[in-house]
Structure formats: C-alpha cells, structure tokens
Length: 313
Image (tube, rainbow, N blue to C red; front, side):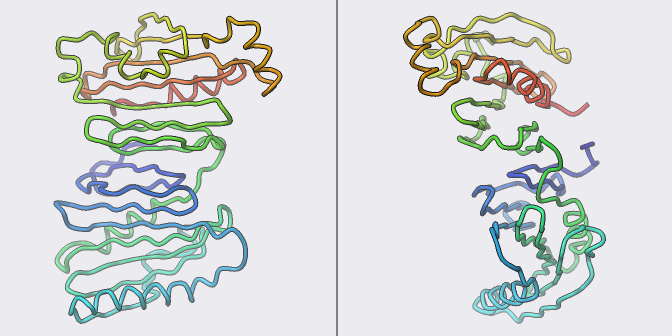
C-alpha cells in the first residue's frame, strides 16, 4: 500500500488501516479471535479498535450497538460528565465499507465518533472509535480511519506494519512469538514445526558501535538457532545496503539415525535455514528475516523476506 502523506499504515492480526502519523500505538494485544489496539497523542486517547470472533449464529448489530452505548454511557456518567449520544450519524455507509455497519457519536467533555460492524467473510465483530476535543476535526479523523479499515486480507498474504516494521506473512502461519520493546521488534510465525521470523533493531549507530554486523548477527539469531544449525554466510547488495545472506542445515540432518527417526515420526525432512540481515542507514536500523523451512517453502520464504521494508523511498 502506498504511503499517505501525514498518515501511518498499520497492519495487525489481519486488520489494516491508517491513522495520523503523530498518533502513537501504546497497546497492541490479543490474537485473531479477540484483540485490542489503542493509539494516543501526548498521553491523550485518540483511537481504539477492538474485535472479537463470532464463530456461528446471527449477529443483530443494532442490539450490540445498544448494549455497547449503554455501557459507555455508564462509564462516562460515573466520571460526573453530562453525556449526549447520537446513533446513525452516517459518517460511513455500508456501501463505502462493504460491511454491515452502524455508526454513532458521543459528547462528554470530549467528543467521540465510533462505528461497529460485522463481517460475514471473517466473522469478526469490530468496534472502532476516534476521540478528541470539540475544536478538533474529530469527525474527519474518524472518517479517514474508518474508511481505510479492513478486517481481513484478500489472497494468500496479509500485511503487518507497526513500529517501523512492515512485511507480509503467509495466511495460515500463526504468530508463535512476539517481542515489542524499545529498540527491538520481533515476530515469529509457525506452520507445524517450520518457522518464519522477522525483526528490526535500533538505533543501529548504537548497536554497531565497536562491533561488526557479523557479531551482531550472532546475537540476533539467538543461542537456540546457532546451536541448532550449521550456518554460513555471504555478503550481497540489497537496495543499496550491505546484506548478510545466511544459509544453514540442521545439525541433526548429518545423522542417518536422526533422519530416519524424523521421517518415521513426521514424514518430513529436517528444515534448513535461510536468512537475511542488513543495516539500513536511512532508518538507522538493523533488519532481519529468517526461516526454518523445507525446499518446498523456498518461494514462500523469498516472498516473505523480500516483503520486509526498511524505509520509504
């Protein structure tokens, strides 16, 4: 998706949308079945998105909206604020978002515009709201966020994008690990006992001070990977960056007994290791994409690794 001026693109658990670039993602939790995202600006709530999977049955959206607004009104009144709520304000339409949708707004010192929808395709019920003050263009913010929002990917790949890390992951591979701390973002996806992993580290000027990229690579790969695979590398050019191309074999694959027991137990060969690691000077970050895969996964691995974007042109 092309970069929109003044906007940041977010992709998480199949959801994609844009928000103003000065809104910070402060909470990202849950999974595909139930989750929550929260954005703030200088500590002030700006946007919330929550979703839940409805596995079966009919969803009466009007009843769900009524229940949600009653709960919201109770919370606001407990804060001692007079509350005004309006429904069906037509900030977005079913035709625009191609979903069964209801919208609403509330005033209680601050102003909130929200919507709730249900997607028959992925069976997700979703609530989103954008919050601000009366003198701010809250309605326009909300319209931009709501119209950009999608709750599931089309095709075989879905886009993930947050905290300066953007990539595509194959549908069907489930997130197995995530780490989001200052200076490090890392996600891993599994299908059986095969794995894809991607991450970004920074600032590179600090991490590489007095250290070669090869030394940092050992740290980024981790003890488990280094002990499991015999890995060698070569240096290539990637988008003008110096890239380490990592290749490796599972150490157990050299043992006929281990190979026999593996095939007896799983019917599959040991995975081999593929990886790229590079320093992006434009973003002052280090990026890594690695996979423990079979030869049949090679095209999938190439797509995954090539989808990682380290900076916008």
